[in-house]
Length: 82
Image 1 (cartoon, helix red, strand yellow):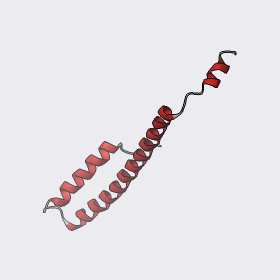
Image 2 (cartoon, one colour):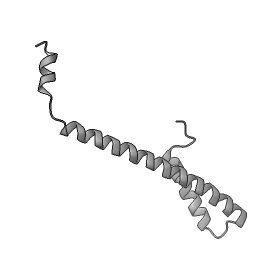
Image 3 (cartoon, rainbow, N blue to C red):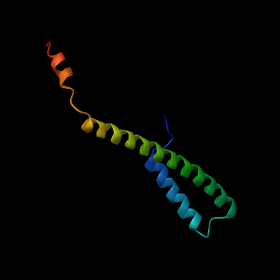
């Protein structure tokens, strides 16, 4: 998956946009363009966070399974050639 910017760069850009929108010197047209860009960045960042959250949950489930599955002694005995 090729992304134009990584998460940190996108977040930094969103913070810049918020700062510019808070300035009173930013005119209306520029504010609207910045707001639109901010909305797009916000959605992309939210999607990335959801993806990461899903991956972490899956890893946690797999990790929990690794510790809760009983050891199969019959399988271990069969692999030794017995």
